Length: 518
Image 1 (cartoon, rainbow, N blue to C red):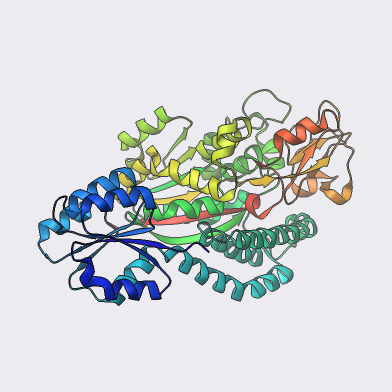
Image 2 (tube, rainbow, N blue to C red; image 1 turned 45 degrees about the vertical axis):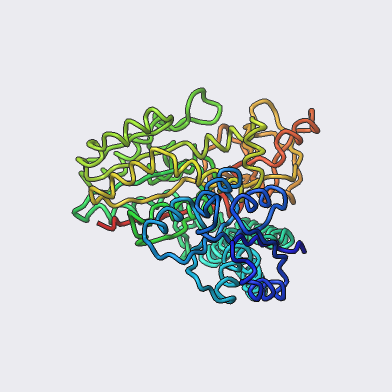
């Protein structure tokens, strides 16, 4: 392990020799300087891990040295040490982004604590996380092996996401490999659970049907409309639970979380099916039967989500509600800015539904653009990119404005996505659908052991293009590939984020209810 180097700059450094010896006895390498100019030069030549900088030195002052050091090494932690307690000096030092501030005379243990806080913090946090995860590893494995309901799997998924996000900045890559392997095992178990349970959920006599896409509005949204204040549903297309958890901290100043749940997306976990089911309050087969003019099959040309506002209006009517509502899709920066700058339409309507497409666009663009593959190389980077977008988005501006107006907010999605890496060969005719995580067709050739097959789509309330149509769904990190030009196809789509199939990431969807702090 690399020895940590401390640079201590003080014109009375000889008087501080006992402190230097104390730090060296703790395993640190301590370099010393007696003036600001030497300190600046030693930072450049020695690359220390932390600088202890006296504020009052002859020649270049500590504050001047701090300014030069930070200009060239903005990430280097600097601890300012001074005899003065003047507020103006403290404010100037803090404004220059010091990492800590100590008043002379300093005790050796004060300095040690500051070093640990600013240099050893990552190692200490990693050790704590490692210890906690090791303690939970066995319990989590038992939970995976014994999970027998969507509630059980939701608990498993929450815990896995918790540890994934805890380990994002871990200095131990081996730890990330362990959690990735445990998540892979969980997805394998979850896929078996869905294969054995999914069709049963649609039997009339089923007693333990989970909350699915088609029941979400009636069960979890409409009861909240009855409150007197405005309700705004923000559906972020293709937002996973971990991405939702990543953006919530930026809302703490404006909202508190009243409820955070997971519901189950229907299959296929694709916008055409899952989102239409949400807004219609119906399964896709029933939409096609009741409102054939509002349903488009996969071989029809054009967008498959053209009638969401109309489907929601009909759902409200069937529910006996005459609630006025405002509906809008935000598909680009221009429409997002317009909505954030003028919230009149939202504030003057009791119930609003907004659909944001950025995360879905990011997922598709990452498949096609090498630079985005580098920026979002894995799940942690994908979360980080989502967090960065949100912090600089017009959506965050809108949410701030809504909080000022006292509006309640629901953040949810229609489905998630999973990073795929394992190709599964499928052969189909020209009318076979092109999605990588599910296929619909009448002449599909595949290995039944590698997929979840549904030969009678009506059993899971899916429409079919013709009498002999079959649906197959990929599980875990699998994706479907045709034998033709196989190597190119696999190379192009491996390590991309896809949706439509069966995984914890795709099927367990966040539903977060926020109340403004005002």
